[in-house]
Image (tube, rainbow, N blue to C red):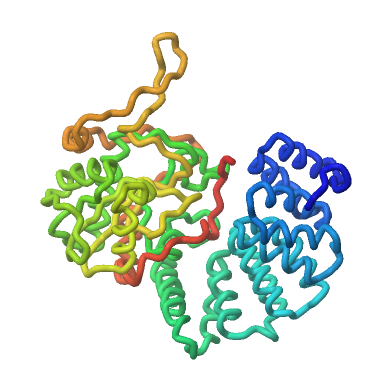
Length: 439
């Protein structure tokens, strides 16, 4: 469909992406497009996207790209291309096309809804709010005004979110009832956290709680002022860090006056190890996870690792709906690839982590870094070492705020009435607090 001789982009940025396709590097070409997606001509972008889509077997996107390359000024072609990009996980490429289509056809609901969807998937909630606010006179309550309130929350504007949520009538379509309840809980959590947490654009613990009901046990002691704002990028985890996290979990349970009677062990190896250590630290019996068990702490090392074992997807489905007295604790939670269920308690947020029993880097005899083999000892043996580790972590840099345990205690005491409520829906965004991340 795209002739390499007669249909080549003209701009230097797009030619660089074209050359990546010549080399068979589709992801590399799409990364090149991300850098200039906002300013490059949509018709030329479509040439590159169409070729990439053809190589990937995405016939719908290839067809939409061909139509836009042929008629870059047509609103319908812009919309179809934007829609196909969203469907194929490329919302950053959808945004310029949909924005131009909306400029040509102002007030068109299908256009501003798709544009808002693209902004949401890119975590650009403030821009989604701007689009919806500009069209407030034509907003339907469901989904448009709901989306305005939701994106206001996710951009950190609680005043606007509360005002728009108050204008929402109960939905007539029952499919929106869980969504309404979830948003109501978000605003209730915000109200309970506000007296003890600033809920500004650096308040990672406060916003993790507002968005998903998660109490974040620790903040990264490095890189706060350099853009990490409490999250880790790459972390080589340790027994000491695991014990520190379990002691923070114990603090959380005590401050919230939650009294579990057991520790539930999930089936993946990392969760088995950490769960056995948690049973020792919390002085509770350990039992294999069983759906429906009440008054228990379910321990996960990394919920994305659980998804990779045979029974993992079924277990994750059983954890979505809350059981009375059940607390789901995840030690290392990915903030760039959020797990399908959101834990009630998380020790730390990372982009990439190496578990203490994984293939960790170490300094070799010649002073060069080398990868040590994974620790394949029995889970109980490693768990015993975690329980006996030193929870005193090394000091961080001089630019990161301290995070003493009494700050966590005060936070939990204030929010315990709104904790452990509702389902554990997946977080679709990192929310108002941004952090640096590597590609």
